[in-house]
Length: 228
Image (cartoon, rainbow, N blue to C red; front, side, top):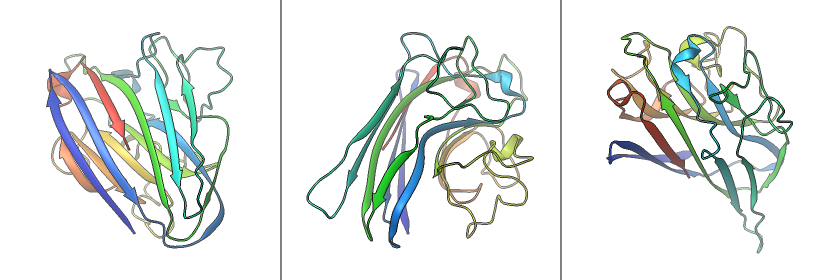
């Protein structure tokens, strides 16, 4: 069972998006490996998105796990530059570094997590990105931050509205999928609410909660995101 609350505010012409996430895991998982900190971008019409990679842009992921045992293990990694020589970044599919950033970002190291029954998982991540529509009325589908089991890879035919994470066969198969995502969706598909939005998706491509997001009206402006 998952309870997720999304707060969306606009401040000083920049987006400050806070997603408060509480995940209560009912079943006992003895040795669960989670691949954390992945940003997946639609594999089609990619040129409209830039993930800032200038030296003043940093993606920092802090993870904090609270167990029933009287101890905790904070884990973190920091990636400050997305260069061609980076050896700690895993690229999948058509992902590749560019002068503006990357289209998909994952830490290349597995993150080992032990979760006992009814344990809570706490983490915080911050990142910034820019959506540039280039004054067009038709553009790409969006980007998503997601959490999935280790070795999760792009399924075939997952470009477009599935954001590189699901496809037409798996997008509504909640019982088969193990993925949680926060999507920044700029194109309305048949399963989407009307207009650009920020949504939380659990095991399917449809958002369980969402908030409107005026991405075209803020084209070229920096969006600052915090998910915790």
